[in-house]
Image 1 (cartoon, rainbow, N blue to C red):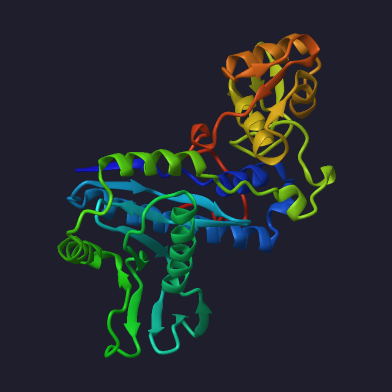
Image 2 (cartoon, helix red, strand yellow; image 1 turned 180 degrees about the horizontal axis):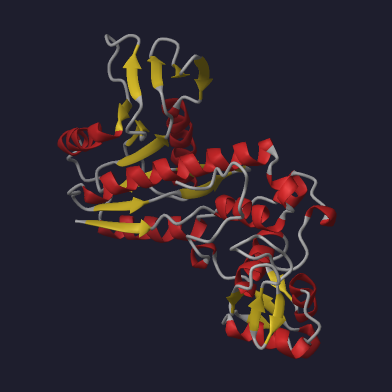
Length: 341
């Protein structure tokens, strides 16, 4: 029996980068730093999704699965790609979606990625998982849960990568290819049979973990020193990238290609939540949509079923939780798109 306690959705940081690309004028979307950072987060997310599939299809015994969780111990936050809780042990999995040949040296505990003629160092997933283990151990102690064995594992999730150990005499080497994960899980269940956490303890632990999960919410505007001059005006067309769209008869119309969209405002408003503030007023909404009518804007905001507080001109509409954001939202057209699968 297994239960997924925390379902992985597109990370908040990815949603924020995609919102930023939609907000930026085309010439600023070509910024290499932005593209590289986004590509790195996207690759990591795809690798984690690969791990999710294997973990979710394995016949676990009384396991509770967290597909990504971010906790705080003292002043430090730490992100665990995959956390599995059982009555006998916990398992931390750190996923790495790297292409090419991966060389792991267990003596120096270094991981190198060889891609074509390039060879570069990469973060060691085992060390990362061990750091998360130390934080989680301290968190369990601080929150009053008894000690329990915590295992760590690094997983290479890219099916085209080749993993090589430079010294195979050292055991165990807890960095494996994804397809080897089921056999490792078999071993863990076979060697950890003593019940440490009863049902009541696990229920309390799950409740505490869900309560303290704190997704990362970056401030990309501040991080990259972005100002209003970098932004497009109004809503851009997701067919030809022209902006701004005009609002006519409750539809957004592109003056360039003629496409119509009755809900084009939704993405713009959600992007505002991701990049600027968790609430929006009628006035601010009119500014970003380039609408003159407060009545039309109020109707638009009501149509999105957003929670709100306040009355009349002081009313504020609130952002939905990150898991409610579109998981397949469009991205702007680029000369060299890095957004397509």
